[in-house]
Image (cartoon, rainbow, N blue to C red; front, top):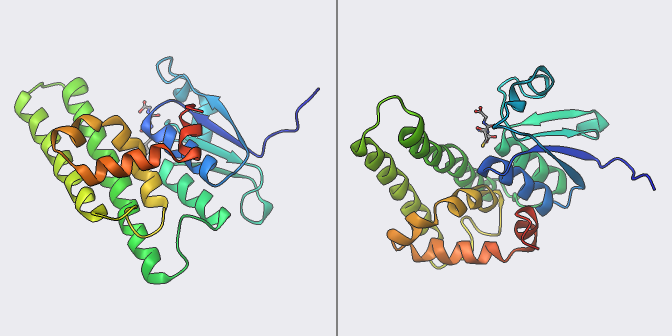
Length: 209
Ligand SMILES: N[C@@H](CCC(=O)N[C@@H](CS)C(=O)NCC(=O)O)C(=O)O
């Protein structure tokens, strides 16, 4: 029997940025299907893929029912998460002050933590000059950033009030760097991670259920 087309196509690879977009769609209960992009095989550099994202990177969503019913092609995992949250009316508060607080930590997750984590990998594996001192420097920057998130969570359940796009954006980064959370003994961040790991949409995004 033929299936009706799902509303959103998610061009995905199993990376932190890919999982961020998958979490967004699962948490906001937006029906979608995954189209796995073979990054190792260079599929993200084909003309077809570059037509979707000129930057040649996953994730990308193709939403046949974007704003005003117009088709929408959107890249950048943070933008996809924001779009999904706004569309569902969840994970981002309406109150202007609370909204800005959430956006502040959302941006810190996307532009500081996610990028900081990528830098530790690039400097260790891809940079033309290898240096243990540089590896240690970028790792320490990331550890310091994680410690700030740890203090922000403190005794609370989530990063900025209710469960929000700040939490959903940070999760894939922490999932990749539990070694740092453990070595720096970041107890609040560790407890937060365990809590979010039990959250059904996140478990589904990672194929754990
Ligand atoms: N800031 C972008 C980063 C996207 C990104 O770097 N994607 C990686 C996979 S995690 C990619 O497709 N890399 C392919 C390449 O750079 O050649 C986002 O959050 O979506």
